[in-house]
Image 1 (cartoon, rainbow, N blue to C red):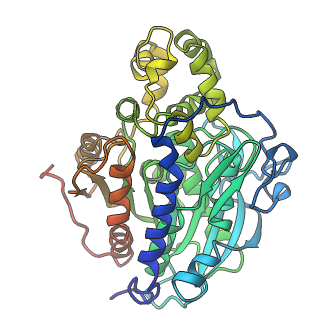
Image 2: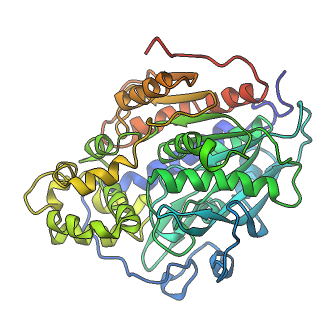
Length: 462
Protein backbone atom coordinates (compact mmCIF):
# COMPACT_ATOMS: atom_id res chain seq x y z
CA UNK A 1 0.00 0.00 0.00
CA UNK A 2 1.40 3.38 -0.94
CA UNK A 3 1.65 6.06 1.67
CA UNK A 4 -1.00 8.80 1.44
CA UNK A 5 1.45 11.33 0.02
CA UNK A 6 2.41 10.03 -3.40
CA UNK A 7 5.55 11.61 -4.80
CA UNK A 8 3.71 12.14 -8.06
CA UNK A 9 0.64 13.83 -6.69
CA UNK A 10 1.67 15.67 -3.54
CA UNK A 11 4.56 17.58 -5.06
CA UNK A 12 3.88 18.16 -8.77
CA UNK A 13 6.72 20.66 -8.97
CA UNK A 14 9.29 18.63 -7.07
CA UNK A 15 11.44 17.77 -10.11
CA UNK A 16 11.60 21.45 -10.94
CA UNK A 17 12.48 22.26 -7.33
CA UNK A 18 15.30 19.72 -7.38
CA UNK A 19 16.49 20.88 -10.76
CA UNK A 20 16.42 24.49 -9.74
CA UNK A 21 18.40 23.84 -6.59
CA UNK A 22 20.86 21.68 -8.50
CA UNK A 23 21.32 24.50 -11.00
CA UNK A 24 21.89 26.87 -8.12
CA UNK A 25 24.62 24.62 -6.76
CA UNK A 26 26.30 24.43 -10.14
CA UNK A 27 26.18 28.21 -10.42
CA UNK A 28 27.54 28.52 -6.90
CA UNK A 29 30.46 26.25 -7.70
CA UNK A 30 31.10 27.58 -11.20
CA UNK A 31 33.60 30.26 -10.10
CA UNK A 32 35.91 27.45 -9.00
CA UNK A 33 36.37 26.53 -12.64
CA UNK A 34 37.96 29.85 -13.48
CA UNK A 35 41.20 31.29 -12.19
CA UNK A 36 40.62 33.44 -9.14
CA UNK A 37 42.76 35.60 -6.92
CA UNK A 38 44.45 34.10 -3.91
CA UNK A 39 41.98 33.69 -1.05
CA UNK A 40 42.12 36.06 1.84
CA UNK A 41 42.15 34.60 5.32
CA UNK A 42 38.68 34.78 6.81
CA UNK A 43 38.30 36.71 10.02
CA UNK A 44 38.23 34.49 13.05
CA UNK A 45 35.23 35.95 14.79
CA UNK A 46 32.46 34.75 17.02
CA UNK A 47 31.23 31.21 16.54
CA UNK A 48 27.69 32.41 17.08
CA UNK A 49 25.81 33.26 13.86
CA UNK A 50 24.51 36.77 13.56
CA UNK A 51 27.39 38.28 15.52
CA UNK A 52 28.45 41.77 14.46
CA UNK A 53 31.64 40.65 12.69
CA UNK A 54 29.62 38.56 10.24
CA UNK A 55 28.68 41.62 8.17
CA UNK A 56 25.38 41.88 6.32
CA UNK A 57 23.32 38.79 5.60
CA UNK A 58 19.95 37.90 4.13
CA UNK A 59 19.40 35.33 6.89
CA UNK A 60 17.65 36.65 10.00
CA UNK A 61 19.75 37.18 13.10
CA UNK A 62 19.05 34.16 15.31
CA UNK A 63 21.98 34.65 17.67
CA UNK A 64 19.95 33.99 20.80
CA UNK A 65 18.52 30.72 19.51
CA UNK A 66 21.90 29.26 18.51
CA UNK A 67 23.53 30.15 21.84
CA UNK A 68 23.31 27.07 24.11
CA UNK A 69 22.38 27.42 27.76
CA UNK A 70 25.16 27.39 30.34
CA UNK A 71 24.05 23.97 31.57
CA UNK A 72 22.94 21.22 29.21
CA UNK A 73 20.40 18.49 30.01
CA UNK A 74 21.76 15.18 31.20
CA UNK A 75 20.01 12.98 28.64
CA UNK A 76 21.05 12.91 24.97
CA UNK A 77 18.13 13.76 22.69
CA UNK A 78 16.48 16.14 25.16
CA UNK A 79 14.88 19.13 23.43
CA UNK A 80 16.46 22.33 24.73
CA UNK A 81 14.34 24.79 22.77
CA UNK A 82 12.28 25.11 19.60
CA UNK A 83 10.57 27.83 17.59
CA UNK A 84 8.48 28.01 14.40
CA UNK A 85 10.40 28.77 11.22
CA UNK A 86 9.88 29.14 7.49
CA UNK A 87 11.59 26.96 4.88
CA UNK A 88 12.39 28.51 1.47
CA UNK A 89 8.80 29.78 1.24
CA UNK A 90 9.09 31.08 -2.31
CA UNK A 91 10.16 27.75 -3.83
CA UNK A 92 6.99 25.71 -3.21
CA UNK A 93 4.79 28.77 -3.77
CA UNK A 94 6.24 29.55 -7.19
CA UNK A 95 7.11 26.08 -8.46
CA UNK A 96 4.79 23.58 -6.80
CA UNK A 97 1.74 25.81 -6.86
CA UNK A 98 1.21 25.95 -3.13
CA UNK A 99 2.85 26.36 0.25
CA UNK A 100 5.12 23.71 1.73
CA UNK A 101 2.70 21.05 3.08
CA UNK A 102 4.54 20.85 6.38
CA UNK A 103 5.04 23.02 9.43
CA UNK A 104 8.67 23.69 10.34
CA UNK A 105 10.33 24.16 13.69
CA UNK A 106 13.91 25.14 14.42
CA UNK A 107 15.17 22.94 17.25
CA UNK A 108 18.09 22.66 19.64
CA UNK A 109 18.78 19.37 21.39
CA UNK A 110 21.40 17.77 23.58
CA UNK A 111 23.85 15.39 21.93
CA UNK A 112 27.34 13.99 22.46
CA UNK A 113 30.30 15.48 20.62
CA UNK A 114 33.14 13.83 18.80
CA UNK A 115 35.32 14.18 21.88
CA UNK A 116 32.69 12.43 24.02
CA UNK A 117 31.30 15.37 26.00
CA UNK A 118 27.79 16.86 26.07
CA UNK A 119 27.03 19.41 23.35
CA UNK A 120 24.05 21.27 21.93
CA UNK A 121 23.11 20.63 18.30
CA UNK A 122 20.57 22.56 16.25
CA UNK A 123 18.44 21.51 13.30
CA UNK A 124 14.92 21.65 11.94
CA UNK A 125 11.83 19.49 12.10
CA UNK A 126 9.14 19.23 9.41
CA UNK A 127 5.67 18.05 10.41
CA UNK A 128 3.48 17.08 7.42
CA UNK A 129 0.06 18.71 7.44
CA UNK A 130 -1.62 15.73 5.77
CA UNK A 131 -2.81 12.99 8.10
CA UNK A 132 -0.86 9.75 8.24
CA UNK A 133 -3.12 6.93 7.05
CA UNK A 134 -0.60 4.10 7.14
CA UNK A 135 -0.26 1.42 9.81
CA UNK A 136 0.91 2.46 13.27
CA UNK A 137 2.31 5.88 14.12
CA UNK A 138 3.71 8.20 11.49
CA UNK A 139 7.29 7.26 10.55
CA UNK A 140 10.23 9.62 11.03
CA UNK A 141 13.05 10.23 8.56
CA UNK A 142 16.33 11.67 9.81
CA UNK A 143 17.77 13.43 6.76
CA UNK A 144 21.51 13.85 7.31
CA UNK A 145 22.92 16.73 5.21
CA UNK A 146 25.74 16.53 2.70
CA UNK A 147 28.77 18.79 2.90
CA UNK A 148 27.78 22.30 3.95
CA UNK A 149 31.13 23.77 4.95
CA UNK A 150 32.61 24.67 8.32
CA UNK A 151 31.28 28.15 9.08
CA UNK A 152 28.28 28.62 11.35
CA UNK A 153 26.40 30.36 8.55
CA UNK A 154 26.44 27.05 6.60
CA UNK A 155 24.05 25.29 9.01
CA UNK A 156 21.08 23.80 7.09
CA UNK A 157 18.59 25.25 9.57
CA UNK A 158 19.87 28.69 8.54
CA UNK A 159 20.28 28.25 4.78
CA UNK A 160 17.00 26.36 4.34
CA UNK A 161 15.13 29.28 5.87
CA UNK A 162 16.02 31.51 2.91
CA UNK A 163 17.01 28.94 0.27
CA UNK A 164 20.32 30.62 -0.50
CA UNK A 165 22.01 32.38 2.38
CA UNK A 166 24.35 35.21 1.35
CA UNK A 167 26.52 37.27 3.67
CA UNK A 168 29.50 39.64 3.61
CA UNK A 169 32.57 39.96 5.83
CA UNK A 170 33.55 37.35 4.90
CA UNK A 171 31.66 36.82 1.66
CA UNK A 172 29.73 33.56 1.96
CA UNK A 173 26.97 31.67 0.18
CA UNK A 174 25.13 28.68 1.69
CA UNK A 175 22.65 26.73 -0.45
CA UNK A 176 19.79 24.96 1.34
CA UNK A 177 19.98 21.95 -0.99
CA UNK A 178 19.07 19.50 1.78
CA UNK A 179 15.48 20.45 0.96
CA UNK A 180 15.73 18.05 -2.02
CA UNK A 181 16.02 15.00 0.24
CA UNK A 182 13.54 16.46 2.72
CA UNK A 183 10.87 16.90 0.01
CA UNK A 184 11.36 13.32 -1.19
CA UNK A 185 10.77 11.96 2.31
CA UNK A 186 7.79 14.24 2.95
CA UNK A 187 6.30 13.00 -0.31
CA UNK A 188 6.20 9.47 1.12
CA UNK A 189 4.50 10.63 4.33
CA UNK A 190 7.49 10.78 6.66
CA UNK A 191 7.98 13.47 9.24
CA UNK A 192 11.50 14.82 8.75
CA UNK A 193 14.20 16.01 11.11
CA UNK A 194 17.47 17.48 9.82
CA UNK A 195 20.40 17.91 12.23
CA UNK A 196 22.91 20.70 11.62
CA UNK A 197 25.73 18.54 13.06
CA UNK A 198 28.12 19.49 15.83
CA UNK A 199 29.58 22.98 15.52
CA UNK A 200 27.43 24.18 12.61
CA UNK A 201 25.44 27.13 13.95
CA UNK A 202 26.46 26.43 17.54
CA UNK A 203 29.81 27.26 19.20
CA UNK A 204 32.87 25.20 18.37
CA UNK A 205 34.32 23.96 15.10
CA UNK A 206 32.43 21.41 13.02
CA UNK A 207 34.29 18.05 13.12
CA UNK A 208 33.68 17.32 9.45
CA UNK A 209 32.90 13.66 8.56
CA UNK A 210 33.74 12.50 12.10
CA UNK A 211 31.90 9.18 12.38
CA UNK A 212 31.04 9.39 16.08
CA UNK A 213 30.00 13.03 16.06
CA UNK A 214 27.66 12.90 13.08
CA UNK A 215 26.25 9.48 13.97
CA UNK A 216 25.31 10.68 17.45
CA UNK A 217 23.86 13.94 16.10
CA UNK A 218 21.60 11.94 13.77
CA UNK A 219 20.43 9.54 16.48
CA UNK A 220 19.83 12.33 19.00
CA UNK A 221 17.89 14.28 16.37
CA UNK A 222 15.58 11.26 16.15
CA UNK A 223 15.19 11.20 19.91
CA UNK A 224 14.46 14.92 19.98
CA UNK A 225 11.86 14.68 17.20
CA UNK A 226 9.71 12.11 19.01
CA UNK A 227 9.86 14.23 22.18
CA UNK A 228 8.99 17.48 20.41
CA UNK A 229 5.62 19.03 21.26
CA UNK A 230 2.99 19.44 18.56
CA UNK A 231 3.80 16.41 16.38
CA UNK A 232 1.92 13.19 15.62
CA UNK A 233 4.97 11.03 16.25
CA UNK A 234 5.07 8.37 18.94
CA UNK A 235 8.04 7.27 21.07
CA UNK A 236 8.18 4.10 18.96
CA UNK A 237 7.64 5.71 15.56
CA UNK A 238 9.48 3.72 12.88
CA UNK A 239 12.63 5.68 12.15
CA UNK A 240 14.93 5.72 9.12
CA UNK A 241 18.22 7.42 8.33
CA UNK A 242 18.98 8.82 4.89
CA UNK A 243 21.65 11.08 3.44
CA UNK A 244 24.09 11.58 0.62
CA UNK A 245 27.86 12.24 0.58
CA UNK A 246 28.75 13.48 4.07
CA UNK A 247 25.11 12.76 4.87
CA UNK A 248 25.49 9.21 3.53
CA UNK A 249 28.39 8.71 5.89
CA UNK A 250 26.36 10.13 8.78
CA UNK A 251 23.38 7.85 8.01
CA UNK A 252 25.72 4.85 7.82
CA UNK A 253 27.42 5.83 11.07
CA UNK A 254 24.05 6.21 12.83
CA UNK A 255 23.06 2.76 11.60
CA UNK A 256 26.27 1.28 12.92
CA UNK A 257 26.02 3.05 16.30
CA UNK A 258 22.30 2.68 17.02
CA UNK A 259 22.39 -0.58 18.98
CA UNK A 260 24.98 0.72 21.43
CA UNK A 261 24.29 4.45 21.57
CA UNK A 262 20.52 4.72 21.01
CA UNK A 263 18.72 1.38 21.38
CA UNK A 264 15.55 3.33 22.22
CA UNK A 265 15.37 4.64 18.64
CA UNK A 266 13.08 2.34 16.63
CA UNK A 267 15.36 2.19 13.61
CA UNK A 268 13.99 0.13 10.70
CA UNK A 269 16.26 1.03 7.78
CA UNK A 270 19.02 3.25 6.45
CA UNK A 271 19.91 4.64 3.02
CA UNK A 272 23.50 5.79 2.61
CA UNK A 273 24.27 7.59 -0.64
CA UNK A 274 27.94 7.91 -1.63
CA UNK A 275 29.15 7.41 1.96
CA UNK A 276 32.82 8.36 2.57
CA UNK A 277 33.77 5.09 4.27
CA UNK A 278 37.54 5.24 3.66
CA UNK A 279 38.91 8.66 4.57
CA UNK A 280 42.33 8.36 2.98
CA UNK A 281 40.82 6.98 -0.21
CA UNK A 282 38.40 9.89 -0.34
CA UNK A 283 41.19 12.40 0.30
CA UNK A 284 43.07 10.90 -2.63
CA UNK A 285 40.01 11.13 -4.88
CA UNK A 286 39.14 14.80 -4.18
CA UNK A 287 42.72 16.01 -4.52
CA UNK A 288 42.92 18.32 -7.53
CA UNK A 289 39.16 18.59 -7.98
CA UNK A 290 36.60 21.22 -7.07
CA UNK A 291 36.43 19.90 -3.49
CA UNK A 292 40.16 20.00 -2.74
CA UNK A 293 39.47 22.56 -0.01
CA UNK A 294 37.27 20.08 1.86
CA UNK A 295 40.55 18.56 3.01
CA UNK A 296 40.82 21.68 5.16
CA UNK A 297 37.47 20.90 6.77
CA UNK A 298 38.67 17.37 7.50
CA UNK A 299 41.95 18.44 9.12
CA UNK A 300 40.25 21.19 11.13
CA UNK A 301 37.73 18.61 12.32
CA UNK A 302 40.45 16.16 13.33
CA UNK A 303 42.19 18.88 15.33
CA UNK A 304 38.90 19.85 16.97
CA UNK A 305 38.53 16.33 18.39
CA UNK A 306 42.24 15.45 18.64
CA UNK A 307 44.16 18.64 19.50
CA UNK A 308 47.11 16.50 20.49
CA UNK A 309 47.69 15.84 16.78
CA UNK A 310 48.58 19.46 15.98
CA UNK A 311 52.36 18.83 16.21
CA UNK A 312 52.01 16.00 13.68
CA UNK A 313 50.17 18.24 11.24
CA UNK A 314 52.60 21.10 11.87
CA UNK A 315 55.40 18.80 10.80
CA UNK A 316 53.68 18.19 7.46
CA UNK A 317 52.00 21.51 6.61
CA UNK A 318 53.79 24.52 5.15
CA UNK A 319 52.65 28.12 5.66
CA UNK A 320 50.18 27.88 2.77
CA UNK A 321 48.73 24.70 4.27
CA UNK A 322 48.22 26.34 7.65
CA UNK A 323 46.64 29.32 5.93
CA UNK A 324 44.30 26.95 4.06
CA UNK A 325 43.09 25.53 7.39
CA UNK A 326 42.39 29.02 8.71
CA UNK A 327 40.56 30.13 5.59
CA UNK A 328 38.35 27.06 5.23
CA UNK A 329 37.39 27.02 8.93
CA UNK A 330 34.81 29.79 8.38
CA UNK A 331 33.71 28.98 4.82
CA UNK A 332 30.76 27.25 3.17
CA UNK A 333 31.40 24.86 0.32
CA UNK A 334 30.83 27.36 -2.50
CA UNK A 335 33.53 29.79 -1.41
CA UNK A 336 35.88 26.93 -0.54
CA UNK A 337 35.46 25.66 -4.09
CA UNK A 338 36.24 29.15 -5.38
CA UNK A 339 39.31 29.51 -3.15
CA UNK A 340 40.86 26.06 -3.52
CA UNK A 341 39.06 24.21 -6.31
CA UNK A 342 41.29 22.40 -8.82
CA UNK A 343 44.41 22.92 -6.70
CA UNK A 344 46.65 20.09 -5.54
CA UNK A 345 47.31 19.42 -1.86
CA UNK A 346 51.00 19.10 -2.72
CA UNK A 347 50.98 22.91 -2.48
CA UNK A 348 50.27 22.67 1.23
CA UNK A 349 52.99 20.29 2.46
CA UNK A 350 56.62 20.90 3.40
CA UNK A 351 57.95 18.10 1.18
CA UNK A 352 55.60 18.42 -1.82
CA UNK A 353 53.73 15.19 -1.14
CA UNK A 354 49.95 15.06 -1.15
CA UNK A 355 48.23 15.59 2.17
CA UNK A 356 46.92 12.03 2.07
CA UNK A 357 50.45 10.66 1.65
CA UNK A 358 51.74 13.03 4.32
CA UNK A 359 49.05 11.75 6.69
CA UNK A 360 50.09 8.16 5.97
CA UNK A 361 53.56 9.06 7.26
CA UNK A 362 52.18 9.97 10.70
CA UNK A 363 50.98 6.91 12.66
CA UNK A 364 49.02 9.12 15.07
CA UNK A 365 47.04 10.66 12.22
CA UNK A 366 46.42 7.26 10.63
CA UNK A 367 45.05 5.94 13.92
CA UNK A 368 42.70 8.93 14.20
CA UNK A 369 41.49 8.46 10.63
CA UNK A 370 40.81 4.79 11.29
CA UNK A 371 38.15 5.97 13.74
CA UNK A 372 36.41 7.72 10.84
CA UNK A 373 36.13 4.52 8.81
CA UNK A 374 32.86 2.68 8.31
CA UNK A 375 32.28 -1.05 8.07
CA UNK A 376 33.85 -2.41 11.24
CA UNK A 377 30.38 -2.54 12.83
CA UNK A 378 27.24 -3.37 10.85
CA UNK A 379 23.72 -1.96 11.17
CA UNK A 380 21.14 -4.26 12.70
CA UNK A 381 18.58 -3.19 10.09
CA UNK A 382 18.43 -3.44 6.28
CA UNK A 383 20.49 -0.90 4.39
CA UNK A 384 20.68 0.62 0.93
CA UNK A 385 24.04 1.87 -0.34
CA UNK A 386 23.89 4.07 -3.45
CA UNK A 387 26.99 5.04 -5.42
CA UNK A 388 27.71 6.33 -8.90
CA UNK A 389 29.95 4.19 -11.07
CA UNK A 390 32.00 7.29 -11.92
CA UNK A 391 31.67 9.20 -8.65
CA UNK A 392 34.54 11.71 -8.59
CA UNK A 393 34.46 12.32 -4.82
CA UNK A 394 33.75 8.94 -3.19
CA UNK A 395 35.44 6.03 -5.03
CA UNK A 396 32.96 3.39 -6.19
CA UNK A 397 35.08 0.55 -4.84
CA UNK A 398 34.97 1.95 -1.28
CA UNK A 399 31.17 1.70 -1.29
CA UNK A 400 31.43 -1.87 -2.58
CA UNK A 401 33.88 -2.68 0.23
CA UNK A 402 31.46 -1.20 2.78
CA UNK A 403 28.64 -3.39 1.46
CA UNK A 404 30.84 -6.47 1.64
CA UNK A 405 31.86 -5.69 5.20
CA UNK A 406 28.27 -5.22 6.30
CA UNK A 407 27.17 -8.36 4.46
CA UNK A 408 29.90 -10.37 6.19
CA UNK A 409 28.43 -9.30 9.53
CA UNK A 410 24.91 -10.40 8.63
CA UNK A 411 23.24 -7.18 7.50
CA UNK A 412 20.87 -7.33 4.53
CA UNK A 413 22.28 -4.75 2.12
CA UNK A 414 21.26 -3.58 -1.33
CA UNK A 415 24.03 -2.06 -3.43
CA UNK A 416 22.63 0.25 -6.09
CA UNK A 417 25.15 1.54 -8.61
CA UNK A 418 24.05 4.50 -10.71
CA UNK A 419 25.41 3.63 -14.16
CA UNK A 420 25.86 7.20 -15.33
CA UNK A 421 28.65 8.17 -17.74
CA UNK A 422 31.46 10.37 -16.55
CA UNK A 423 30.50 13.93 -17.47
CA UNK A 424 33.17 16.17 -15.94
CA UNK A 425 35.59 14.32 -13.63
CA UNK A 426 36.84 16.44 -10.75
CA UNK A 427 34.05 19.01 -10.94
CA UNK A 428 31.67 17.28 -8.46
CA UNK A 429 29.04 16.86 -11.17
CA UNK A 430 29.67 13.10 -11.38
CA UNK A 431 29.23 12.97 -7.60
CA UNK A 432 26.02 15.00 -7.56
CA UNK A 433 24.19 13.49 -10.53
CA UNK A 434 23.39 10.13 -8.87
CA UNK A 435 21.83 12.02 -5.95
CA UNK A 436 19.48 13.83 -8.32
CA UNK A 437 18.81 10.85 -10.60
CA UNK A 438 17.99 8.56 -7.68
CA UNK A 439 16.36 11.11 -5.38
CA UNK A 440 13.16 9.06 -4.96
CA UNK A 441 14.90 5.68 -4.65
CA UNK A 442 15.90 6.07 -1.03
CA UNK A 443 12.47 7.31 0.05
CA UNK A 444 10.68 4.37 -1.54
CA UNK A 445 13.21 1.88 -0.19
CA UNK A 446 12.78 3.25 3.33
CA UNK A 447 8.98 3.31 3.16
CA UNK A 448 9.15 -0.38 2.26
CA UNK A 449 11.11 -0.92 5.47
CA UNK A 450 8.37 0.86 7.42
CA UNK A 451 5.85 -1.53 5.88
CA UNK A 452 8.13 -4.49 6.73
CA UNK A 453 8.38 -5.69 3.14
CA UNK A 454 11.24 -8.06 2.25
CA UNK A 455 14.41 -6.07 1.69
CA UNK A 456 16.44 -6.50 -1.50
CA UNK A 457 19.76 -8.21 -0.84
CA UNK A 458 22.96 -7.85 -2.83
CA UNK A 459 24.99 -9.94 -0.41
CA UNK A 460 26.69 -12.78 -2.19
CA UNK A 461 26.63 -10.99 -5.53
CA UNK A 462 29.10 -8.13 -4.85
